[in-house]
Length: 589
Image (cartoon, rainbow, N blue to C red; front, side, top):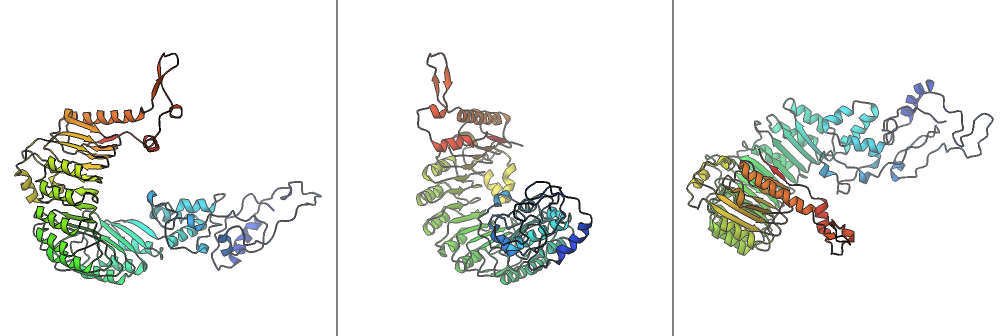
């Protein structure tokens, strides 16, 4: 018999009996509505009718999809079987709320299909697969609220939590430990965890994570500006030693570590920020490939950077990416790093080391000739150091960052862009500066000595910069107040930063960059902003008007010929670029 309004049935659980279904159906059968007076098989009136069609099967066979075979259904009614659901490989098995993470073919651990059977969890006529797709896109708070709607939604939410492998949480300032503990208990298979904390944190949070997430592989803890991280180095070392599956650890606000000993055979990525006055730093991580250590900008920092770099090179031979930001970086620290002979090193970032000179560049060039990224921002290198970089890395380096380097001129920048054909990103912020003006952007360096160095420069105040490059995509010239002329011919450039370029003349700016998407012009004069806007709008109009024009047969007027009628060769790359092009945006305050 066909029912118009079917009662809501919760999804079946593996190994569950059929008693739960019959007990819920009994009170509903008393109030059931009359069905149709026509035959449900052939459509003829039931009165005096003998249907010639075979009766519907009262037993269900485990066919259709492999997922149906994992659930046993009782033989009781003539209710139509649910539609086949999608395969489990098409389900995102993570509570990741970023659209970029919608990967159906990601290599994740397979989940038991019986745990994901949602054949009865739909609401009304909504398919179960749609219900799953909708609820898995909800944030944690929304998912908790949706689980209170009905029993079927609560069961779907429970299975979503159990299937989660990635979780990103913004923890409220009150009752953060209780909230995190209650959420983590719902995710026994969690492997990637990201927390945004808005109140003080201590080792109790680490203990809660260690207890609730036995298979944790990636952990990231970020804090707001007012939050105090009270986790000590010993507590962090015990956490890393106990989590034998941990491969990536990122933590902010590590000002109270005091010193640490990290021993792990699985840890490959380590990011620690706001470090201050560390008495000891021991890394016993043979599989470490990426490390980022960001120290505080305070002058009373007593951390021994040379000993840290020396121990890092000896105990982590597989390092590929190194980032160290400290005002105590020196040429001796660079020599200790080059003595380690890290053969796999590809990215090196030594930031805010005012004692790093051209001799340091020579040591780096001799030891590591396959670098793809080199960041020496805040150093004291000059145009000679840039020349050594161009001689050693012409076929490898693609990202060069030389911001806050007061001894670099526009000639060195032009030479770098001309000699590095693979260059895609270049940052030269606060290099070409006017020493007679105030530097509102010098707060980004956070060091008083750098400010005094900028004011004592002997460069010519007004310089021009001419760059012609075929692969450059991002160029940053923020704070270059000593720049008055700029000529760019970069067909692939899509991001240009001209913040605080106050002396740049509007009539001496030429931007031949058809792929430009955004120009940052905060702190610039209005005339300069208007000149930039007019040039980027003209570039966009030229891209839109690339179809050829031809006269009519009688020679009366010229018309634009569609591309399929044109005899000229057509470049597919230009076609895709024109279809996906959008007008450039000039960003100002």
